[in-house]
Structures are given as C-alpha cells and as structure tokens.
Length: 403
Image (cartoon, rainbow, N blue to C red; front, side, top):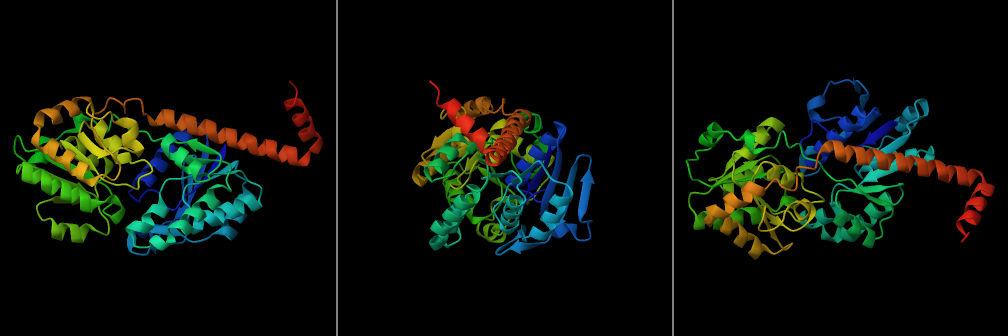
C-alpha cells in the first residue's frame, strides 16, 4: 500500500511516540509498503529540504511552532491546501493520523473531503495533562474534542486492551489494540558498563536508581523524588540517575543536587544507562503505555510502578517487579523503600524482570498493525460500494437475515 502518516512528533525529536512511530514506519517499509510522513520541521532542521527521501520512505516537512511552555516540542500548523494538492497528485491508499493537533485535524478534514480512508492513534492522554498544567477547566472540552476527532476515523488504535475498554466506555468507536514492542537485543543486561557506574561515583554494593524520560510535569517527578528521598533515608548508599531533558530540568537539578542528570542521550547510550542501574521507579499516572517500563524490564531492572498501562501487562507483582494501586502515593513510597532496604528482593526481581517482554518484538507488532490497516482499507471500499450500489446493500441485508 501507499500509506501516509501524519504526525506532529517524529525523529529527530526524542520521546516515546516518536520512537514508536519510527519502528512502525521501518516495519511497514520492510513489509513492502511505501510510507510518506507529513510532519513539522524541527528546530535542528533549519535549511533542510522540504522533502526527504530514503528508499520507500519519504518525509514532507511542513511549518510548525514551539508548544507554549515546552519549546523542545513543536506542533504542526494546518496544511490543508498542501495536503490536498499532494494527495490529488498521488492518492494514498490510507492516511493514518498519529496526533490530534492542528496539522492532524487539517489532514483529517482534507482526507475525508477527498474520500480517502483515515485511521488514527490514541498515543497521549492530552485531556489528563490539563490537570498537570493547571487547566483543569479544559478537561471536559479536551476529552470531547479527542472523542470527536477519533470517531471521524475508521479505526482508533490504542496501546493496551485496558485503554481500549476505557475509551469504549467514554464513547469511542472502532477501537483496535496497537501494542508496543521492545528491542531485547538493544535493551539487555548485557549492556551493563562498570566504567559508567564509576563515572557516576558508584561503588560496589551501592543501589543505583534510574528514571528516564521527558522532564515534564505529567511524569510526576514530585513523587519520584519523594520516593527516592525515602529510599536514601533507609539506605544512604542509594544513588539516583535521571536521563532525559525537558522544561523541569533546571528546577529539578537545583532542588536535588545529589542526583546525576545526564540530559538527552542516544538509544545505544540509553541502553547502557538502563543496564548499568539496579532499580527503576515509574510514577506517571497519565501514560497510555509507557515504553520506558518495557525497556527497564528488558534491561533487567527491579521495577516499581503503578498498576496500569505497560506495567499492568508486563509485571507480575512480587515476581518480576512491584505493582502499586494507581494513585496510592504512600504505597508507592513504601515499595521504593522496600527495594532500597532489601537487596535480596532486588536480585530476585531482576532475575525475572524480562520474563514477559521477550515476545514483544516489533516485527510481531507491525505485522498485526499491517493487517488492521489492510482491514480498514477493505471496509472503506465496501462502504463506498454499498453507497454507490443500493441493490448490493439490499442483497446483503436479505442474505444476513436468512436463518
């Protein structure tokens, strides 16, 4: 197929959605599809050509602006005229919209006006973010907007069955699971680096706690640092490594000088950081999946996190990690302290951490996504055929009513 992906985040941006989309694009291209990506030009791409081509994958860069309060990320401006011209010249078999911003909305309207089949992904709980950024009054408006957006597409893909059930209860239609894979060759205990631990000032027997991700409000760093402070009180040898960047980094570094902040690192370096640590804390309550949970488990870390999203699927509490009831901060801190005080427990959890991620290959995820997209295109063609041939619709109804 000739597939168009419309997204407001993609490499060279560094985040879970961009990483996920990169794997899906590579996988679809490897399966023989042509993929065209429509995305905003990033700050680092000033002067880059408007169209980038690499084999069967091409990228069209459109105008974008920094997200207010979060200049590291950009949103795409509406591009209806350009999209319609592009799609009239070379009609895609399917348009998949990964983000619900201005660019995504203009793509949805443009594709529908041209009669193109459109699917979408629910990657981010934007309506939940309204609480983190003190815009709670926008919660219901944002939730209604997201539902309206996705219900105008043929399929909405969400990363877990649990989330699909929640969205269905909220009135979303035509839901499908698009899970997440993890590269167990890259994220593995074998990536451990003793020299890296020395660089962190770690000595033998020091428990190293790590957290990776975007340093932003929605990741719940307030609780993570409360938990680590309690761990350090229980075991003063605990060390804390924070990997990533974002709008909170300056404030967090100033408030917690004992922690080692690395900033953004590439994927190979990230894998070494995971494997060189011992414990992973995951406190976010707004994830749709949480790629970092899968990566931490694949890297053999003792994991403690809330019982939802990826952790709910990949952790058996007490066997390969510790699960905490969603939102129970006291229990979260208690679990973190338990890991700081019980090295035998940490060793036992680490030994089985990767048990449930070994079959989460990206090849399997992409194959299922490919099948679901093919099904969506077929259903779109059937709908068109039924609309243009009323006698066919009547025949189908008569046939389906037979005993």
